[in-house]
Length: 379
Image (cartoon, rainbow, N blue to C red):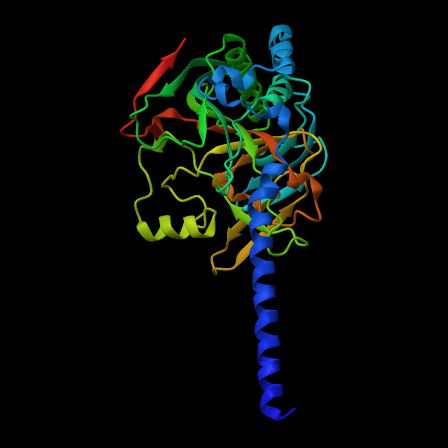
């Protein structure tokens, strides 16, 4: 065989190998990004096609019906003995990590992060609802995102007594609606549980010195019962990837917002309040709580800030136990992470995970409803 034939044969084999490799990678990506996601949907949490047009069907499960039927209200009015697992306090630009129950906030220290066990109260019962509500089946050819139920309303505090003034929903022609989430069913028992869980968390934040010390105050809240999608195996299934960020509140905007486009863009890109205590607010400067169902991987948290020299300082926060509630003041530089990949080293992210997210504003005079929205009160 002459040299030319040998070279041609090598080229053909090399081209064939590249084609097979390309075909393998294509099939792998399709399976990893689409079909694996659908196979991991729990069948007992999927609505039938004829149930999709009625949100009441989402909470029509034996577990939820039994819970709402028996629920009598389990808020502890005196929460001075909170089951605190860890916390971070802030004073004069310095943060302190606490891993015990003795958090002293008498000298002006502000709690900016805390992990609290609320599993025996209203939050714990709402987590049971979150674990058991149903969703429509995922589409075959579409990368799924977070989805679930939402509810919103306003709260009022006089001293340490909280009350829910009303629940509301947005009209269909309102601007800025997050269509990943549908309005919760107007079920009186469910709304009563929402109310108690909101009050429980507000009281906890007040006792943790996370809220202001006004005698009378008002604010808004939004509740999301979340289904986090199954994590695709991805390009590198052996490494947990993290996308650090903060989440903005929907439907409410500051009365006097930050208007500097460079600052707005920089914060969005960096994912935290790099100006640190700037006088202008953004929709990220709110309290956020996260409560994951048991036995799943929870979000990671960290504190991040820039000093006067432009150096970035990061303090990692120990993992929060699933079932416990993470209280976060985003204005003070607390981030959380979205898992990007790594499904082969953590089996809990190979199936949908459920969680409760709540957003809170305080000091209603510095916030206002988003323009272009119409609120419909729910009795």
